[in-house]
Amino acid sequence: MTGWALLGLLSSGREMSGYDLKKWADHSLRFFHLSPALSQVYAELRRLESSGYVRHRVAPVANDDLRNKRLYTLTDAGRDAVTAWLREADVEAGVLKHPVILRIWLGHLAGPDRVAQLIDSHQAATRALVDEIRSSRAAAPSGRENAYASAILVWAEQHYTGELAAFEELRATLSELAPEESPMPEPATEPTRPEPAAAEPATPQPAGASLSDAPLPRPLAPEAVALVAALEASFPAFGTIPHEEGRAQLSAAARARKPAELPTSAEDLRIPGPAGDLPARLYRPDTEGPHPVIVYFHGGGFCLGDLDLYDHSCASLAAGTGAAVVSVDYRLAPEHPFPAAVDDTYAATAWVAAHGRGLGLDTARLAVAGDSAGGNLAAVTAIQARDRGGPEIAYQLLIFPGTDLAAETASKAAYGNGGYYMRKETADWFHASYLRTPADAFDPLASPLRTPDLRGLPPVHLLVGECDALVDECVAYGQRLADAGIPTDVRVYPGMFHGFLNMPLEAARQAREAAYHAVRTALGT
Image (cartoon, rainbow, N blue to C red; front, top):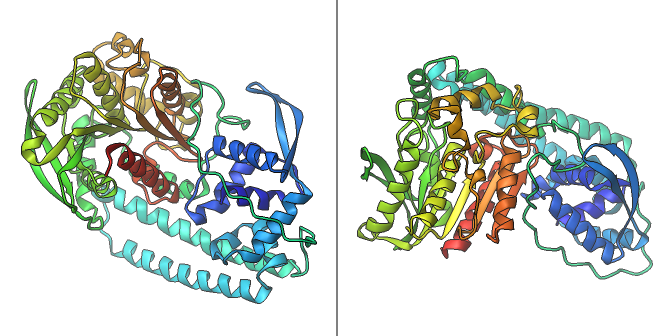
């Protein structure tokens, strides 16, 4: 499908760079539940070029990160291939939201009456959804304790109101386009359709390097703009309030949520830790066991978060991967500074490996996972397990992890000043609370990117948003793992921000699906 999107976009007759094609493809393909990485787009373009459907020329550019770039155009054979494909394709109403694709559909497949029916149908459904959201928002209690729920409702109303405006624009576009307008000539013969190439993982790149030929900062994805604004307006400014108050507000937000039921069960555990028992929660998927197990460490800047805040996330992980999940409530800073959390997460993982069989778990298939600060702890736990002779860890799922607490990167400078949800001063507050002294930031147990040797670690799936302040250090960690011979799959999601994974976003759904698939494949579920 990615190949057909690129051919369709180039059929407008314009020369387009790989990055421009990626932006347009992201927009049109999200209706097919796909989001290609830039590396995938370039790989697909190379394949299409070798097939004779696309050609390129090299043009010089004035850019600190790029000396020149390739500009792609469609060949006559490519035009013929798209024409043949359009004759066979099914109508996907969502694709019509893209003006270029709309022109192709009008010229080759669907007459204006059919397009108008599709627009009307989607517009009516969206209007009903907006009315439902507004009713829910009016009925919801106000107050800081409902900040998360309120933010989601605000975003949803703004997002779908924008969708209604988009349908009005489509109507205007429809009236301007004549059905006989065709961006491609009809072929004399119908060529064989090329098979689309399989999606490739994002290619890790060095920290500080540009992920594309676009300047920093890059814009948020359109679907994320209103949500980030609502989150920034609703959540407390961490770093300006006591830790206890921040924890209380997040706990209240967690209690206010009413997530959908998932096919999992949960039971609370107590795991022996270095300084006393650690609360934990075991999630089992509603399938026949014994299940492999994922030991999960929550985010929160080493200072915030608990089992309840991540209850739905861990249940979703269990349901999506078919593995049991043990969520660990490690000690938090500043009451328990570095390396308390490191000691707790390693001890919890070792305990699950040693005692999980008694809980009906298949500990021969054990993974570690975590997001943000928890992703840092998962990475460090895997390194410790290697260096301390066990336990044996089969896989790592690292979700926008902080990998270098001492780094000053281009992405931190670009995305840490507001408008992208996680501010630099918030991250600095987390780190100052967690570390005993600034020198701790250079300890590999705090900054796994600074580990001298990464050989011998488990395979990794690492995901991060393109507009995350941590993206450079995430990509750098992925590059170092790959250089060390570790099977590494790094996914950088266009226009996404820190913490996006469990938000009501299409890119988040795609990221969860890719991560769950990677874990299922690694653990054999």
